[in-house]
Image (tube, rainbow, N blue to C red; front, side):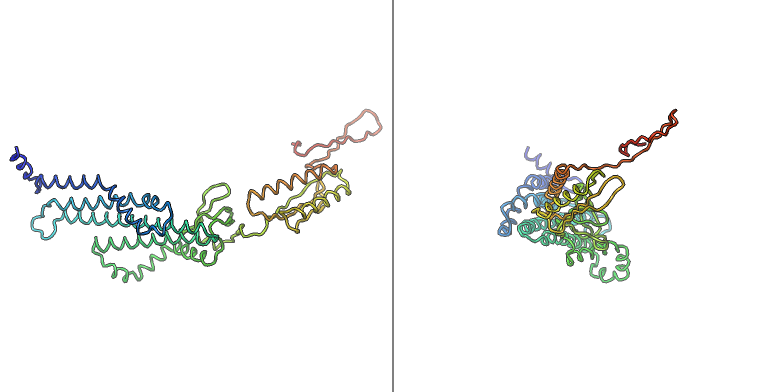
Amino acid sequence: MLTDFREYLSYEFLGNSMSAYLWFAGILLFGYIFKTLLSKLITSIIFRLVKRFSDEEGQANLKRLLIQPLEVVVFLVFLFLAVNVLQYPVDPGSEGTPFMKAFMLRTYQIFIIVAITWVITRFVDFIGLIFQNRASRTTSKMDDQLVPFFKDFMKVMIYIFAFLVVLASVFNVNVAGMIAGLGVGGLAIAFAAKESLENLLASFTIFLDHPFVVGDLVEVDGITGVIEKIGFRSTRIRTLEKTFVTVPNKSMIDKPLNNLTLRTFRRVHFDVNLTYDTTSQQIKAITTELQDYIDNHPHTNQDGRIRFQNLGASSKDVMVLYFVEALDWNEFINIKEEVAYKIVEVVERHGAEFAFPTQTLHLFQESKVTAPQPPKTVHFPSTDIQ
């Protein structure tokens, strides 16, 4: 029985014994089973090195970011050990490493570089979380937008470096010579990527000039919303309709931009339309009382004006102009509602009425009586006339 088993293990298939295939399968199985455990162990070791820089939730965030890419790296390591157990056929007349083994080795190198790059970029995300939490505890908004910007910048540099490593180690490309020989080719690439380069330079202009920061309410190119993120190429805005708009950074600095957050007051301007039956004494009393109310309101300044301004087609128009110092949108509309209720109250208390567009039509009716009949006058809203 033991002899038969030994003969079975020594049986060769495609240049490898059955024992080699069993070692191959066993190593892969071991790596698949213990990859999660080993990944958690490596994560714990890494966290001990950065523990004093992190907060209470740091270990949970680090595990969430690193476990998955580390599992891939660990499994690839066991895959490398398993593949080296096997022997590969040599092409007749060829020297050196067998073609199949060389092909698999290059493919493996690409995968391991990609996996390690994935781990490094996830660790950069973790570092970004640490600095983002620290930035959220400061009053300045500048660091809130610098952290994601430099995090993305570091990740782009890591991707470029990984690409160059793949060219040099896998495809044996002379990277230094390639970079030195770009010359005219680099100029052509620069022209092809003209818009991307303009947006990249615009992002640096935004950081240096500070026309806005993350969290500001801005209006640019007909778009009004809150700045959520400033990236390499574009700025992301959450509009008042809660949609998500991406605007190229070049447009953010080339076109007129109104930073609504930096204004000191919000302006309110509209007309109150009174009927022509309103007397001058009533209008004077209404404007005087509303002017006193606006001047003494705790959330307005002294630049408000309530004036009898115009004789309209169907109304006497009183201009209402005031400035609210509340910059928060919800507080602003609450103050507007408060002032509107006050206007209605004052107008009604002085016996005046609000006007609406009307027209006067004179209807003439023929009569059998020779004496002329006075015209009949009918008043009704213009909206009812077709």
